[in-house]
Amino acid sequence: MTASSNPILPMSATRIRKELAGRSTSARAVLEQSLDVVAVREPTVHAWKVLGDASARRWADALDGDLDRRDIGLLAGIPVAVKDLMDTADMPTGYGSAIYAGHQPTHDAACVTRLREAGATILGKTVTTEFAYFAPGETTNPWDASRTPGGSSSGSAAAVASGMVPLALGSQTAGSLIRPASYCGVFALKPTHGVFDLRGVKGLSPSLDTLGWLARTADDLELMRCALLGAAYAPLDRWPAAPCRIGFLHTHEWSQAQPDGQAAFDEAVQRLQASGMQLIGKRLPDEQATLADDQMQVMAYEAVRELAFELQHHAAALSRPLRELLEKGQAVTEAEYLAAQSRAATGRRVARELMADVDALLVPAAPGEAPRGLDATGDPVFSRVWTLLGLPCVNVPGLRGPHGMPIGVQLVGRKHQERALLALAASVHTVLDTPS
Image (cartoon, rainbow, N blue to C red; front, side, top):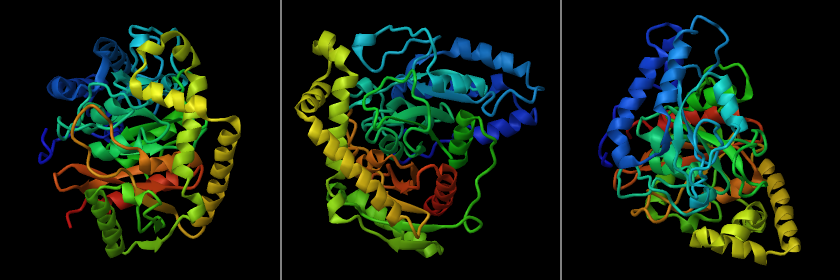
């Protein structure tokens, strides 16, 4: 698909759920539609590390025999992709590293267990960068195969963007959900840190690692959230029924945005203001200018400890970017690490104050359009601060850059207020996705 094309995408997860409930389709028919898209797009996109089509067909057929039951789960019959950072007992899990080629876990990750309990049809494992850091896999951007899809949730973003699945699990330690979602033109939710169980997910930095997911609608993000929590689902409210007070700020990292990224963000502010939504200018105090660097320091310090086995026994098999991260981590003292964590705690207080009179903050999601080339995954600079602070974040698609590539904007919300944040994201998308 070129950047100028407008693909016809399969049904959303919420529509699949509705049609399955009304018996106007079947789980097997939904799955075969996804597999048809995979057959067409995968030779170019390379989103999948493992495609479990045979087991998915068995699962879908079994679900079709049970659709009269009322307790089969929110995701029953919905194809879902799982990032290859997450253990699966029925498929290999390689964590993006040659060290674990062919590795077969004995148990599912907790998040995968929740998917199965919710009835999801798990289609396979999507490509991740090495241990969720920077060394890229083979995945290309569905809008332009010469460009990166971002990382580390590369395959998950590409699988959703190309219409192979309506939902995909990913994770974020720096910008591994928001950045690829921006580059690939889909929604992504990075929830509040610590809410969702990471057992069975290969760790890099416990203070930062966060389970998340990608979709083509905000309502689909909410459906997945409810399924993982075991909560009841209801469609999101939209503005003007829902409140819409947005604080916007360029952030201290604004100079690292590309001209196309700066132009897209300013266009988003203008279009939202013109729609009648209330936008209020904000700024982070100068004392918080170090937070992006603090995130890198915390990540490096913790990564050395999380990957101690791999560093000790398989150092030669690690990529150069990962070895450099671990070398930086070895140089960080405990005092420096604790100081960074202290500044993060202060940053959380400042963020609460910034959001005292607004529903969320609007900030850039990525520097601009997805860069050309597949030897890097782009810069997570605009996610580092919010990941460090542990706040929920959503990428909202809808804008395009000068080459027709997607550019998202990021909404940052209050801790544990994901539903309200997703409702706001749905409203913002309605404005941004309307031709100006």
